[in-house]
Length: 456
Figure 1: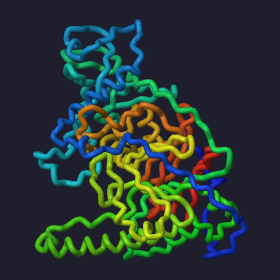
Figure 2 (figure 1 turned 120 degrees about the vertical axis):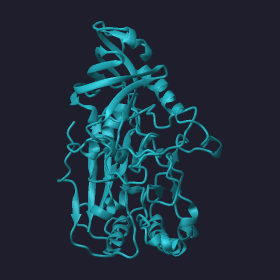
Figure 3 (figure 1 turned 90 degrees about the vertical axis):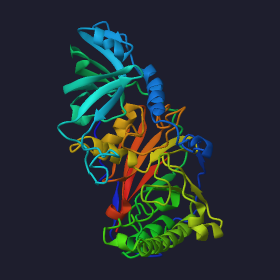
Figure 4 (figure 1 turned 180 degrees about the vertical axis):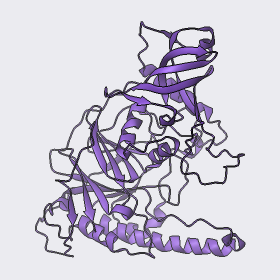
C-alpha cells in the first residue's frame, strides 16, 4: 500500500506572531489515557536469571496457530528434526535465526566496536523450533504478505526472530531451498469507535533537548500547542488538541567518553551529569507550560535516563518537579506503550524496534513506515529482541506479540514522516525527530486523518 501524501493538508509555520489574539475561544476537551499493564513489568517479573530461549519458545507457541497448513501440494512437517528423513517439497514452521558475522558477540573482536550495519554477504539463515534447526537456501524466494502484495526476498532481507512458514525443496541433509515464505495471519482489530467531535492527539518525538544549542524552535512548539502562535490556515487546530504524547528522547544523547577522557573519569562524569541536570530542568519548564493547558504523556527513549532494556520503565516523576508543583495533567508511559483514548486503542514505541531492524537487514529502498507495517505482518513489535535488541528475559511470555491489532500504531525517532492505513483500518505513523525536522504529528480522532505540522 502506498504511503499517503500530506502536502496539501500539512502547513509550515513561516510567519510567526507570538502571543497573537485568540480567535477560537472555547474550553479544551482533555482525554484521559488508560494504560494497559502489558508492558508494565513488576519487579518480580524482571528475572534476569531466566534464559532468553523462553521468549522464542513462547513466541513460537503464540504464532504457530495463525498459519494455514492445509496445502495438498506438499507435505507439512510438524517438527523440524523430521525433515532429515524426508524428500521432495515440504512445509515447515519455525523461527528464523540469522547468523551474522558482523554482529558484535561478547567474546568476539567486534564486541567493543560500534557497527552501523550487521549485514554481510556471508550471512546464513536457519529455521528452528523446539526440536532442532535446518539451514535455508534463500535466493529470490517469494514472500507472501497478508495484503496480497507479495515480494521477492533474499537472506539480507530477513531478520532473526521472525516466526514464519517455509515451502521448498529438500536439496541435502538438513538443507532446504526455499521457494515461498508465509507470514502468520493477522489478529483481529478492535472495533473503531471514533469520537463524535473534533479532537486531536499530538505525537512529538526526539526533542533531544540541549540547553547549549538554540532553543527557539522548542519555544515556538510550546507556543503553537498553547494556541499562542499565529499560523494562518488551521489556526483553530491547537484548541482541539486533547492529548500530547512525547515519544522518547526528551534529552540529547550524552557524549561518549574518549580514551583521553578516561584519564579523569570522575571529572568527566560530573560534567556530563551537570549538562543532563540543566537539560532536565529546561524540559521540565517546557512540559509545565504545556501541561497547564492540555494533558501530556511521556514515553522514555534510548537517550533518556532509564533502563535500556525493553520494555522500558516510565521516567521518574522527580525529573518534573516544576510540572507537579502546579498539579498539571502529566502521566508516564512505558516503552512500548499500549493504551486507550476514549474507545480508541493505541500502541506505540520510541523507535528502537525499527532502528534495530534497519541494522540487521538491507532496507535501502524501504521507508520507515514500510518497516512499521512489516512488524504488523510479522505479528511481533520487536522480532530482533532479544538477539540484537536488549530486553528482559521473560519466562512465560513474549510481550511484543501482537495478540490484537490497535486502531493507531506509531513509532518515534524515525528519519521522516509517513502514514498509511493497513490491515483492518489500522492507522500507522512514523514520527520524525523534532530536533532534526521540526515536525510534530496530529491525528484527528474523529476522521482518523493524520498530518504533520512543521515548526521553524
